[in-house]
Length: 355
Image 1 (tube, rainbow, N blue to C red):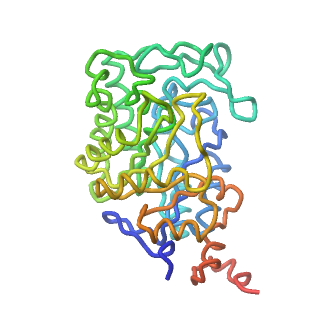
Image 2: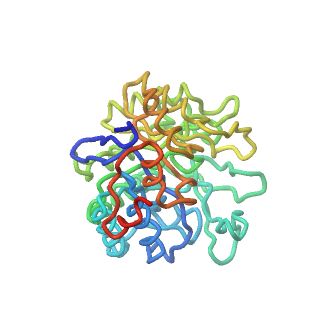
């Protein structure tokens, strides 16, 4: 059996293989509610055989959405449809996870197919918030600088969202601290100019991430995995960098986080990013092997042998597939064939497995 199709157990959850469907925003919700698009989108990737399906960034407050069409988990009414989605994913033998998120200063945007730019006023707009009154891009709305009280309210919103995720039946929670969204904005000196307990020193800048982890852990079952997605570097001088990420990963490990999902970028609009196959894998490798915490590799991983090599070389423990999965919902089935593994197909599809 290939490494890619070997199981991995984290706490009381066993992933049948090492393929994870990365959280990918669909911008298809109304008032945060999931609908049949999300059921079919996520469900088809469970039918396709991935070990773990992580639902897209789900906002813990209405103001924490990237767009007005983002999924949400800020009120109890959101849970009913999510339960249906989770139930279907689990019925296919995959594990359902959810990413909890707050967009911070990158909120109040149009959906990508309408340009994706921040909406300054009018319908579907609101005032973004952040650690400091520093917009993501020149000309954008200056975000409201959060008070300590407001920060603590957001921490409690993550806690409440984690409780709802538990109620919906998810077996993995991932805290989104990457891509220039709120938690990343706090730990990066590019966007955090504060002088209070949430700014200045490394310890102060990571305080919010730690507060959120601890709040989530207060309601999330100890026997279920907790992931944190980070941007390992801002890709600019004087920004957050991979050595900072190693240091943060050590703290998160001590706090009981089970896996670091190692992405990068998103906090500086003009950063020069050398995107290409495996370009982010060295971050997962460095964190994994220097700190001794499990990691997920992500970023232009598009074929089975590429994924297998990352695992065989012990650079990561899970392979996060994003756009390759959008192109092919049955990526795991086809990857198993490419590696010569006898991957189980749904009974309804078995007649097409060979020939």
